[in-house]
Image (cartoon, rainbow, N blue to C red):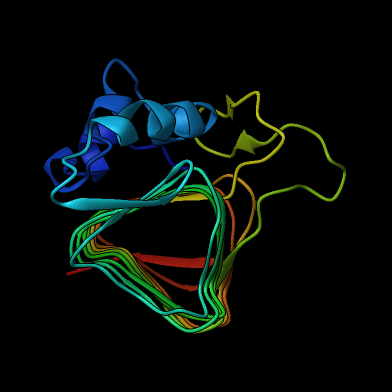
Length: 222
């Protein structure tokens, strides 16, 4: 069964991201994916110099962020106040890491927005995705952002939505919980306060306040 895709305002509190202006005038969160790079390059130079370091071209890191020396920070990138970027994290490009967010050991980010307090703590791949406030990805869970046939991603909702994007991982609403070693297939949308059980493969839309127990079992929280 396909569900209606939630809009930005139905699944995310935009007061918890430095990227809030990027979402203005858009209906669905994936509509921002093509604009993240330019947004960072425009916003970065305006950030307060007494609050953010600019260690290399296109990279801005809050002075109170905790970034391990072994982490790779590619441009463009903004790492906001109080964020933690741990040992051997690999931030490739076009990433916004929100206030208090965690990017853990061996985590790879590419073309993403992590809202404030997001946790990607252990061995996660997050590409072409948006993770809402307090969203959490368990160890080893990943976003798969390219279809096997390399065709554009369609969000399997009611009705289906053509995104026009060849690369699109997942959208997680506020407080979404993804279990260990789960795989979010291209174009997955998980509503706010929903949970995905460990080792589950997910596609399409998961409504807000639901539990995904396996690929065919989705129940509403009581």
